[in-house]
Image (tube, rainbow, N blue to C red; front, side, top):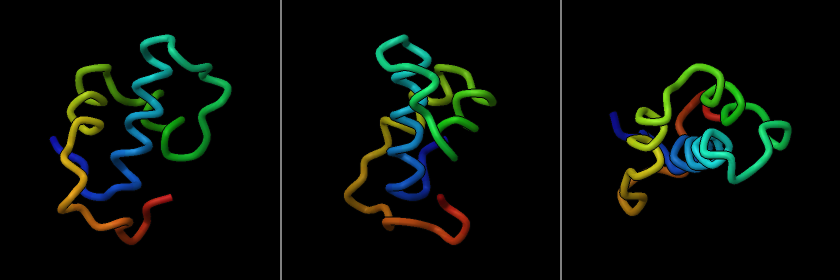
Length: 63
């Protein structure tokens, strides 16, 4: 499932980085922390790899 906003795509990228051990989990906040806890690495990769050019900056409810 692709990300629906740039904010969602960015949060997924941060969570994916932590899942892979490239960044500290303790550095995650808000949506990226929730995504880290609730999504698999494959799901995060789908969100993070979404092309950003056609996405809105945020959707209502994005953090």
